[in-house]
Length: 350
Image (cartoon, rainbow, N blue to C red; front, side):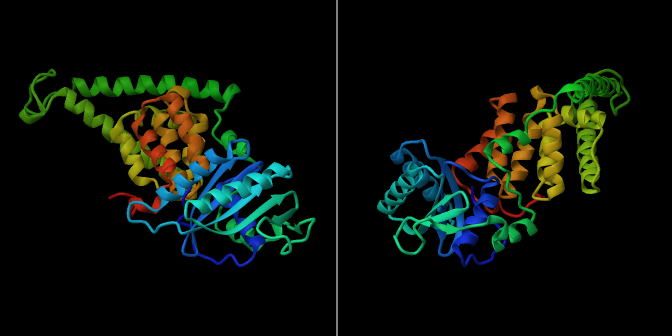
């Protein structure tokens, strides 16, 4: 993931270790994490499983570091690495990746191993005790600042995936029934629009929009107006701390299938925590087959907020619903290429 977070200085190794889980969105285990720096600022954070071949891991992380410096962005010039795991292989893998990145031209500032409640320096033998330096994440200044900023670190990667899992039981049944009602409501809205007389006074659906408008134009206008209204209502409710009921949520779900309605929601969604809560709630409650727009909006909000792990989990839900969904693929490319959220310019879009 890339970072556009507020600036403060990490002066201690413990602060660095305390902040990594909040940058990733979860507490890593059996992992190697690289932090790419532009000058002395963290520009990109990436993680890989320890079990992958060293050369493959270094190649993948190197590509991400290179991509983070494209498009006019400041190049990554140095890196910090942290290995996670008590297994001796964690130290070996972290050293190997550090050496490979050094060979690619990245200055390796720090190489640490975090195991349990202690950490070790892997670059020298005397700056941390043989048994490791004690470490309590909850007591670090970095963890306190991250919490103040509203950042959350889930217990593990599985917990992030669990956040976007669909509801089950009676809640899922109630939403399925609400979607049926919403689809009937949408059919009625389109039918009523199609039956509206043309603005030149004649009935039926003949003519074109340039010749005074047709019933089809009226139905289209009704759909777009209803979609905009539903989006804006949902955002007002969420901003006030409320939650859409099943019928409101289902109505929004079916309207967001129209790209114009989806784009209106996209243009109004940025990094507000209540927006993240809204799209996360709807992703969990939504009818699985209709989730591509909602889960993509969740991914957008998560990515803009710097939570790349949650964004990735949301995109997997979106593509499960619609493997060809363009917005999901667009955001997936942004994650894969380590494009920083701020690169899209001022948002919400006007």
